[in-house]
Image 1: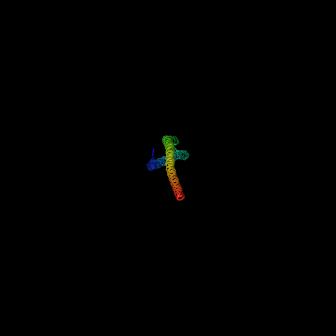
Image 2 (image 1 turned 45 degrees about the horizontal axis):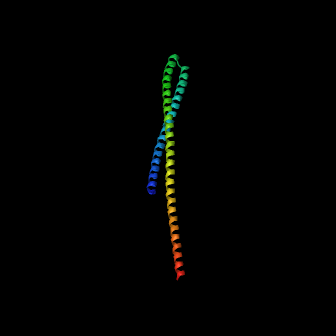
Image 3 (image 1 turned 90 degrees about the horizontal axis):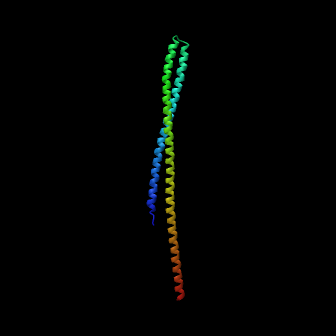
Length: 161
């Protein structure tokens, strides 16, 4: 059975290039997800800071103005809206972190496939080189054998004459 190593190496290189392209795409998607998760984390923190600042301002305003109960009710209503925004921001962050974790798993799988493809390509090249070296060595041994036979025949012919 003869193996077409040129074709085998070409196929392995194609597999490796395809795996590299896939890895690059997965890496871009992972980085995008990570950036979205970071943006969601920052948005949540900002909403939380806004709520704290709102209450601080509301409490400071109560000491300086009349109608404290009415203002407190307004502040409470606005704080409730802010709390709803915080809860939504928390859900957004959880979703973004979940997607990032999935993308990281997919990226690791793509990295593993790329590594395997590179190893397979390397093995195919090594095998082709070893077989080529083996052919060259066998040819040299045949030439040496033929040369030895030729020298023996020449020696026998000189001796016979």
